[in-house]
Image (cartoon, rainbow, N blue to C red; front, side, top):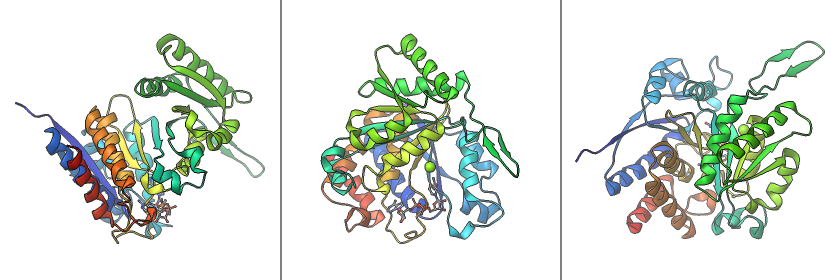
Length: 353
Ligand code: NAI
Ligand code: MG
């Protein structure tokens, strides 16, 4: 029988990036064995590592490999070494998102009892949270025309109907695989782009996804509700800047930045999957980084990139089991290094099968 080969590009990047992506790759190899898949990995340069080797934070061959892949797993980029240099590592990240046409950024958060215990919020507020933020990534005020004179400055916020439609459809589709609820966040009482946003989301809902429960929320009160009753939300859909702010707010509910994954998706092509943390230069190269955020990003790559749901779920179940057992890195109060924490997850996958 012919086994399908999935091409997975790994971009280790800088700082802890190589350590956490190595752990995730080991996990993917074990999944391939259990489920009879063939994952073909290739590693390429991005960020500071790419600047050191080629002078370019995103070499053309990296872009080619990403575009020809089924999915890309990224570690992190940046660090003090490259600050003040001519080229910045972060350019590599912005440019690869652009080159791959990634318009939706997804950040899921599930708060287990162990995480709830470490959260700055009360356990009874955050335990059992299971939500996903869907942030539009290529439009809005970050990309509008910028003007600066001696006495004024302006940033233009622009959204086209098409830009709103494509991210809205993607969010509704994900909602159908979850609890079937979408909360669309805007500032429709003040902003014209938000009024358009609300109209388009309402129309797509009525025409294409009437079975999903839709509610609209204003971003200021949403910021409040998210820390008062985060368990009420399933899919949170919003534009670029609101999503930037709300996803950082949400990332603290779970207690450690090292745990959280993300995905950036386009239409049809490969997606980019990465932990939400940065290159953590303070702990890099010492086998201290928590690999869970990257391992859960690899699970998102399987689910959203390759359509391998069972495989993704088995990684998620293994991570949950390991965290519940306290087999963690130091950021969660455990004693394991990066490698040992990854191996604990591999053992848990073996135990499940
Ligand atoms: P950071 O996320 O790298 O680190 C913040 C704190 O969290 C540090 O104390 C770090 O040790 C800890 N931490 C981060 N990841 C961890 C993990 N996996 N396990 C345990 N502890 C972890 O953010 P920071 O310090 O603001 O930025 C460092 C560098 O990373 C900068 O150059 C920044 O530009 C870059 N960065 C890159 C991102 C990316 O590649 N997507 C995102 C955020 C920052
Ligand atoms: Mg941000």
